[in-house]
Amino acid sequence: MDTPIEFQQQMESQRDAIGEWLGEYLARIEWFITRLEENNTKREIMLKNRDRYDRNRKGAPRKDG
Image (tube, rainbow, N blue to C red):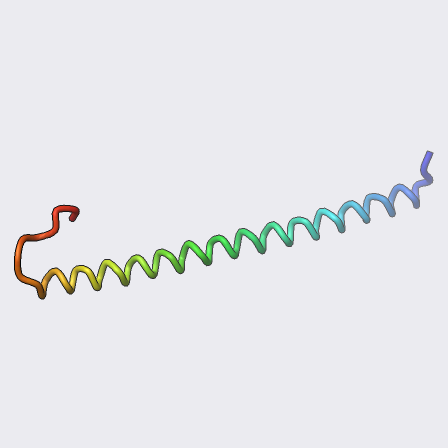
């Protein structure tokens, strides 16, 4: 059986391990959100350029939009 001090040390060690894991998990979520934002920005730029091109070209309009 652990003494109260040993038990407290084990709990602190587990808390530190969980904190480290959460930090890594949050960093991955941040990275993922950043990638989504970058992709969304690229998509917006692509659509603006496509719309500008469509306005300037002659002929039938696009069928997909």
